[in-house]
Every structure is written in C-alpha cells, then in structure tokens.
Image 1 (cartoon, helix red, strand yellow):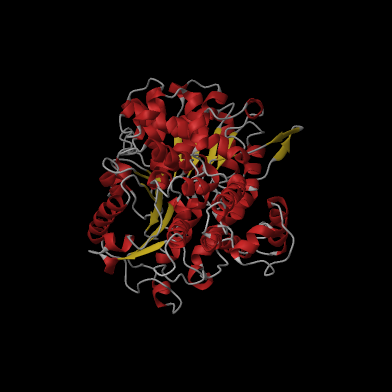
Image 2 (spheres, rainbow, N blue to C red):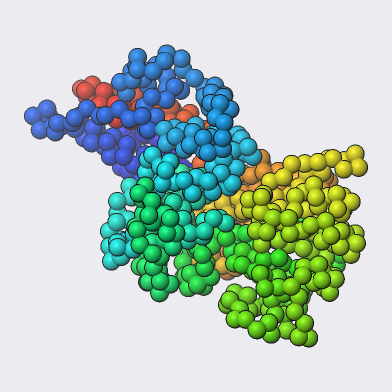
Length: 623
C-alpha cells in the first residue's frame, strides 16, 4: 500500500491526496497541517496551539522509539532508556503471556496490548498465528463473550441500538476512520452459546483482528459493529452489569427494517465498504436480501462452506473414488451445514454433474432424524432444498441405520453433539470405504462429533480427516499423522481483501467458490506429500494471497469489479499488487521512523520557522 512520505508534503506544498492517506494517521495529518500552517503565519495572527497531550495508546511511550524521537515528542526520561527491537518486545510479550494461567487472562492481556501498541500486537500475532489464534478467537472468544459485561474495560468498535433507527447515518459519522470492511453481528447466535446480545462484540473484534493478521487489511480500516436489538437472554437482561438494551429481541420484521436502514447508511458513508454478517440466528433472509446489491457475505454460511469445500476437494482427490460415486451424510441441518452442502453442490456441478444429480448426493439428519419431505413436521425453509423424497415412506432416526441404508463415502458433522461419531459409526465407515472421509466440524472441541485419535484408531489410520476444532497430531504405524482443521480463517480474509481490492459491487457465489478452489491449490509439495488437506496455518498470509487472487479473478469474470485496471495484470503481477496492498506490521515502525527523520530533516531547512519545526515534530514524530 502506498505510504505517505511526510517530508515530501513539506516540499510539495502540503497537497494531501485522499487516495494515499492512511486512516490510522488522519488525526496526525490534521495536527501536522495545523502546526505547519501556524508556523508560517506572522506571530501576530498565529493561533494558540495548546500542548499536545501524551497518549499511552498512540505509541508515545513505545520502547522502540529512539532517543531523538523521545526528545521531539517529549517522552525522553519518561520511559526506560533502552531502545528495544521488535524482537525483544515480542519476547517480553510472550513471557508475559506465559505468566497468565488461563486462556481468558491471556485474552485480556492481548486485548490490552492491541489497545496500547497495535503494530506490536500484529507482529506478535503474525509470528505466532497458530498459537495465538485460539486465544484471540475461537475457542477463547466464546468465554470472553459470555463474560463481556464483566471484563469490558475500554471501547472498541461501534454499537448501534434499535432506538437509534432513523439516525444511523449520522451516528456513523462519529467513526473517525475510512472503513474498508466491517464485521457486524446482532449477537443472537454467538458460536454455540446462544443469544448474548451486545456481549457478542467479541466476535467482530476477533474476526477483524484475523482479517488484519491473515490478509493484511489495515487495522484502522476495519470496523467491528454490534447491533443492540435486544436479547432473548433473560439472565443477561437482568444482570446489572449488562451493557445493552434491557428489552427482548426485536421481531424479524423490525430487524429487517433496521438492517435496511443500516445497509444504506454504511454504503452512503463508505461506498466501497465490504460488509460481513456474523453469528445471526437466522442468516439466510439477510443473505438473500442484500447479497445481490451489496458487497456482503455471511461467513457462517458461505465462509464455512468454502473452507470445507477447499479441504473436501483434496479429500476427494486422495480418496480414489470418482466424484460421481460419492455420497454424503450430514449430521446437523442448521445454517452452517446447509451452507457447506450448497458449496459442495457447486463443486459437483463443476465436475460435470447436473444440479439435481449434485443435490441428491446428500442426506441430512437433524434432531428428528433424516430430513424427508414426508416426515410430517414443518421443515425450516433452508432444509427444504435437501429434503429426501426417495425414502419410500421410511423414516430414519438412527445414524447407524442410515449409514447402512445410504452406504456413504463421506460423513460430516455440524451437530454440536460431542461423540456422535462413536466407535460403531466410525467402524461402519471404515468397512464401507478404503479412505472414508470423516469431517467432524462442530466447535468447540467438547462438541466435536469425534476426536482425531478416535477417527484414526477406528478407521485403522485410513480416514481422510478434517475438524472444526484443533486436535494434536498422533503417531500411527510409525508415521506422524496431522489432522486437517477446516478453519474459516483460511478463506474469509481473502474473500474480504479480494472484494476490497477489486471494489466488487457484490460478492457473488462464484467469488465464494473461487476462495474454496484457490484454497485447495495452496498446499505446497511437502504438505501434499504428507497427505494434508489444508496448508500449514503458519503460511496463512501466503495462502491469503492465493485466495485473494482467485476472488478477484472471479469478480472480474462476473463483471462486478469496479477496479477494472486490475484486469490487465497477469497472475504474477496481480500477486505482487496484492502483497503491496497488505499491511505489514514488521515494516510499519521502520517506515514511520523513516518518515519522521525525513520530516525533521526537511523541516530543519525551512528558514525562519524553528518554532514550527518543534511543533511539527511534537505533532508527528510519535508515529
């Protein structure tokens, strides 16, 4: 991403181009322009500029600031004298983390670090993405959301209440930065924890941290957004510490009207904004209503589907079974399960099956048994598409009996029923298939349908396995087997960045599928040789470049890209462009230091404006 060279602004007459301003620095720009303008005025007309207040959150007290910078910003002597490298700083952070005894304590420390030194936070996260992701997002964020009203210490993101309707656009003006992407939730279905109201803010905050760490979307260009539309959680409403509206959840029609106003307000304020919906109890109405006309997607439905399809494609290749011969049983028929299946339908269609042939590859099981058209109960709208009508009046409540009937090659779990894939179920799958595909996708690990160890032992090491929760590697037959984890972070950062860079007017189904297909191609030779279904999560930024490229190409193919100049790039050029536009916390401090030094050097040459130089350095050097 282009960086603003502050020194060149002095030489160029202070012409600030909005296209290259970094929102994180906007307040500094304003202060910088004011101090320069004041320093060039006659003293008789120069406005009074009060001394700038030092801030613990702006980097003023960063231990990596040099002695010169500390002198210029007025912190010399206020911090220990050592000038520390990022390496030393991250070493201290890791030591502090190791001193915390519980995941929630580690979560709180990382929240504090992000608030006080955002670049250090993202460097620490980028260097330790595998170890720290479970602390800033699932599973720890679940506990954080449950206790949000108890552990909240400082604001982050925006809250819009039902009582604010009619004024949403004006309220958005209170947000000080240019926004490229927002993650929004109404808190009505936070993970598997139910309706947590405004306590759900931990989800948008954590999700956007991963957008930055994985795809390099600038932290200041992200907006965590929680909709305070009441909560059905009576215990929360009655808790004196709860920070949301103490009213029951609004009706579906009221929420629709609120969302209509919000979507118009967001796109009026930020015309190119990408909007990701997260953890809505019923995600399908909003997805169907807004997807055609907004750059929006729902990660629970589409992201989950895409990441599973990415691993599924590789599992299909490894199984040795022709695509046309696969059959899948899904335990769990909620929004996530249906979203996954619809993505797999797209894969089957691209492999030559008709939509009807692809649809009939699936058997869904919910709390009432096999989902059939003649079961006698009213099916939720999203289940109707996959309801079976070839069951000859027979209903199947038992998963074991259904496996005997269907003889599937694929068993997927999105039921949140821990242990549902028991020894008998797994051994049935192993008897039917040389390489059974076993995907227990429920989170957290306590609700996973089986563990990796259980799957390996009961399929004699032959299963092709991916889970929603992390499981450790294990040895089998003198080989180290590593489980795949279908973590949405493989795809949603690339979907978001691809939509941002292409300036997509909408996020099409082809763009979502492209993220899955791109993910499946992102494994390196060693990962393929070791039988992995997903790439090493520590390569997530490399993977995100591949996914982003695929999403941009799909946007171009569908004609929804407004950044049409990117069409002329070949893949290598497009990859270079993507990398250039990714925020890099490893370089951020060095870049800022270069700008400060050039600014000071240039400003020192401005004859007769020594006072202005001092003010400028006070206003800018702390970056």
